Length: 452
Image 1 (tube, rainbow, N blue to C red):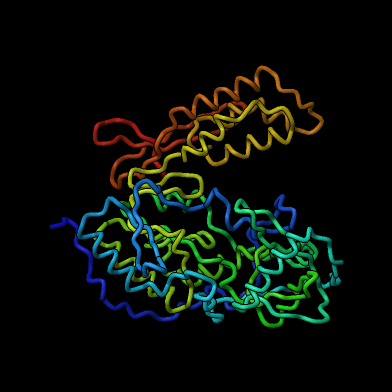
Image 2 (cartoon, one colour; image 1 turned 180 degrees about the vertical axis):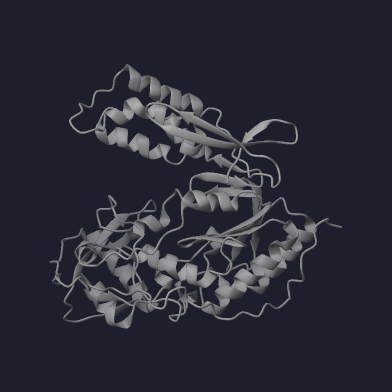
């Protein structure tokens, strides 16, 4: 008999439509200043290898809920007790409709929650891009993708549009192409909506310290949000096969990411920072007590079923004890640096150009909390980026570079503080920087860095 007891999975949770935190939903931006050549988050970003939220794959197993000729696999934790495993499988089987196995399984997010609007700045004038030439092989692949999106209702044929953009085929590893759209002109004409994204450090801190976690990802996330009918035609693009516009929110629009965040916040505002954390289309259900996890998952499933949000089964994992979250490993133990992030820095050659220096410093932002006095250490490197300063990598820079790598060989684990136990505050002051650290003594009297 398992020591863990879950609530009955057939228990009903009545849900009321959550009131929107705002009364008017406009398009929102999640990228702001970015180096993306298309002027916003492109479709290519949706399938990067460095996913924002992933489980530790070595501690999971696949459960097939489909038929032999049509497998429907969902990943669950392999360290579950027999009772936990059985109850979790029963729960998932009861909610298979919240997963999308293909585009046809996406009904679209309830438009009463959100629609994507495209307001245009008063001084902006529509821009029509001329058709660009594509390699014939790519052109046929673009045609195939357009036909697929037309068949599932993502696109409509359009005539006489005022705005017109070109497609940008991006090669994929399997030899196919991903069809992005060059919305740069439209993005320049759209005002920036400042709906906020979550602070990454606070989201990571809120997830650590929980013994049971489930990681979820929206299926073709952005495409689940409908375009406002009056703004569909603004997304028009041109191909040699015709002109089309999006009926769903496409990737590449300036404000698409935060529109999704607004939808997620509206959906889960009464669950966030309790059972649920959300970063755009990545969602986490967490439980302080393992016995409560199924009930939390059921509440989550009921909510997304009610408002027609669909999950990607290939990018979901349920009932695990740790996972990768925005460049960190989170678990009940605390927060650790993702080993892949460490390896990427350790394998970096010495920077020689300003671009390479900025790239190195950019990688450090994920691990800055794990290296004491990092600003002091990096001061010789920071000096190279000041105005009118020659980019000369000297011995001081090299020593700083090597010291950072040495620190990453044994990074600390940041642990959640124990309530009621005294906190120790350390301050570090130099001519260049000011730093601080909170710590606690553990049960063995050993000092550990704490997260607040």
